[in-house]
Image (cartoon, rainbow, N blue to C red):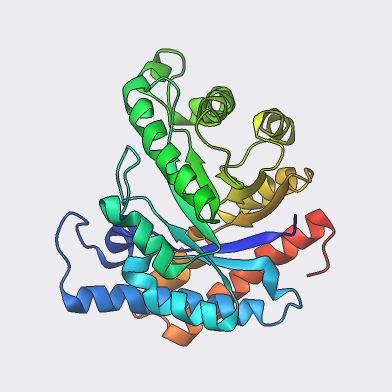
Length: 295
């Protein structure tokens, strides 16, 4: 399968909070909504600036939401940039559809290359997991019937019971997350077989365990988790050793600091876009080196 290098900026509630200091539970006014769209367009402009120097434009994609990113989605389609569309409601611990039962019409209207669903799934959370699997099966069946490719962003946070085994989140990441992730994939495979799994970083040996349990026709892309550049580089180096891992979706590590500096008035919008382009290009170059790609 060809590489998939994604600029993800489908954040909604966290975007409101982190960049504009807005309580995501409060209704936005028009000026606030327009400001969020403007900031997302700044990310997109940086992405386009980075991508224009590469030959294989078909390797690249944007992951952006309909709520604030519809102008971006339209521009991306005109430019031949692949679109990944999030279908999950923002900021919820269990998986629910954005737009409720109307999620189908929204996917059909936008016609993305990938429908993307973020699911937080720890196998110990039995009650929530049962509801998640039921909804994900509905999504999977819809995508298969209508020829949409499905991208699952799988996060496996610690459950309450995990803290009887480990002391904190850092220890959980080191000792338990790989085991819980393997278990989560096994359970989710019973109701769906996505085209792409989008997952947090692991060591090379741990990736081997993941690859052994995903379905053979699936691929994986690495997410950035908002980590610092040094950490993302380590994850990329480990992920790059496996042919099943075909790309990355690194967002906040690329755009957070430039956007915050722009919002605070320290730099111009153009400078923010330039920095985003530089950051995205740097990760693209690293990935190309690890995978021996000519992009």
